[in-house]
Image (tube, rainbow, N blue to C red; front, side, top):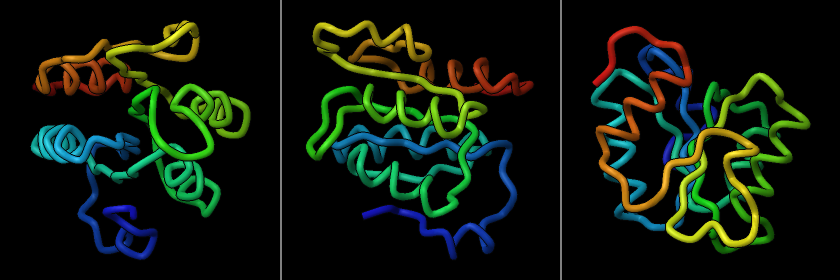
Amino acid sequence: MLQMTLDDQSDQAPGLAYILLAEDEVLIRALLAEELRSHGLVVIEAADADEAWEYLQAGGRAELIFSDVIMPGSMSGMDLIRRVKGAFPDIKAVITSGNPGKGNPSELGAYLPKPYRLADAARLAFKILGLPGGP
């Protein structure tokens, strides 16, 4: 279940950018979301690629998708990014995995191998979004 619904967005204080975080590992998702929020980013959490895609299809806002590769559900993180690139070409992507499989995630966006430091992930998000400051 998404941590922030579309209705919640109108009540959210304006952030520097909206990040859609698709990660099935609850602890990783929670820690990374908190790190990104601590730097002024608005984070929408999705437990898998299907949930992230539904959010976007419903009109959800995102300037960057931060997605794991291997997740439960009908599609992988790479499948999600391919769909997003086709439907929402302005949304940037960071793909992360400890085991990306046979595909090449860097073809679809910035690749951040697991394990990673939370501060490094936040710095990468700021860099990709072209935001000043950051961690």
